[in-house]
Image 1 (cartoon, rainbow, N blue to C red):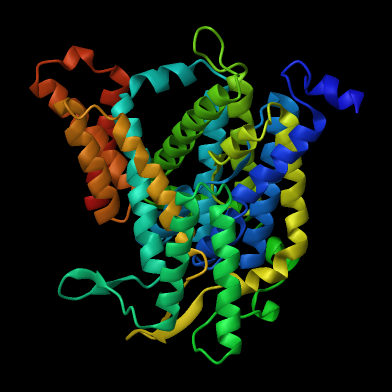
Image 2: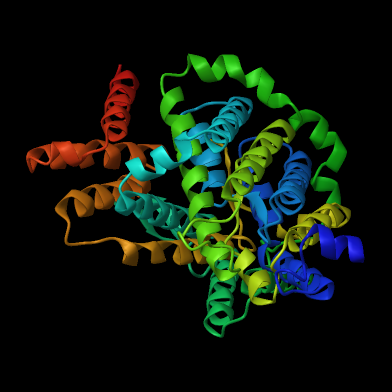
Amino acid sequence: MEFLKTYFKIEERGSKVGTELLAGLTTFLAMAYILPVNSFMLSATGMPIGGVFFATAVAAAIAMLVMGLYANYPVALAPGMGLNAFFTYTIVFFYGLSWQAALAAVLISGILFFLVSISGLRKKIINAIPQGLKYAVGAGIGFFITFIGLVNAGIIVDDPATLVALGDLGHPTVLLGVFGIILVVILYSMGNKFSLIIAIVATAIIGVILGALGVDFMPAYNADAMGGLFEGTKITAFAAFSGFGELFEHPEVFGIIFALWFVDFFDTAGTLMAVGNQAGLIDEDGELIGSDRALIADSIGTMSGALLGTSNVTSYIESATGIEQGGRTGLTSVTVAVLFLLSLLVYPLLSIVNGVVVDVNDFGDAIVYSPVTAMALVMVGALMISQLKEIDWNKKEIVVPAFLTIVFMILTYSIATGIAVGFIFYPIIMVAQKRWREVNPIMYVLSFLFIIFFIISAA
């Protein structure tokens, strides 16, 4: 016990061992939803769900052990929402790359993240990009994953006349998804810290009960349909290395890697600043104490995740729940890491939250709704758009690129395209206002590269 107090500086930060352990449990319950959500989202690419579940739990644990033991931060990490959507819906579905190539892109972005974290480039890059554009990217991802959640629930469907339309609200699977969204909104509005995990579990249980009572198209326990945990891991582990050739043959390779790195880097930086301030880890100059170590932990998590078989690992704002509980040291993170590893034991139960096949389209492909996990995408997306309030809407050079960033993310189904459009229009507007000297040279370089990105894509 004394070793723990000394190593983690527990008393120095005004905490106790018991408080840190409770804070870790609280954080885990607040973010455990990522285990089923990430597993099913990435499995849509053809990845074995067992391998993704293993990678999600273990990569998160590795990142949190580094965060706790090396950085001594009470911050939890796991594959990021938004980044997993980019992996699935943009890199694989939109650009047509294999999941192996997508993992290769994640690995490269993690290596870049690591290099930036240990060099002086970190501050230069952060200072080069206007704050409003950073907020726009975060908010745009919120809209994007909310849209995905509504589609996964069957609430929004494609329509030949209007592109999208309201789904069949009389379908039992859609109704279950609607129930889940209503439940999570009610729980969140009541201030429940564990609204997401409670909503997922409650919706799953109700679905199983309804199925047992004879209601069609309901979730059911079927562990045999899940695939083995370690068998899947054999397929996903180190598969990234086989995807490098395909990745670098693709014309959008730069945009893909940059988007992964950009979102991961700034999502982590923003989260660390928010929870670091809450935990009292900000010095008199407004800088995070030991932030370099925290960023390194994040980059190691992303590299580990890519090697095991999952999308970028990032810091979770849900860490705030543990900090509210009193967590102030890395022992909180270590506790969450242990709980993520123990979650491997309940893998078979994941079959209950599996997607439900409701129909077959004209091409013979199964139409799958995910009523049990859709609400997590909708709720997390709703929370992410709060960043809009931080944008100065009186600045034309910010409001137009910010708006275009968000709109193009949603309408092109691509986070990378949204970032590219916003980054191109910012310097254009600044030049039009004869304020070109105020633009950081790094922004001109990024804008030029994104223009090349579009030219290559159109060729």
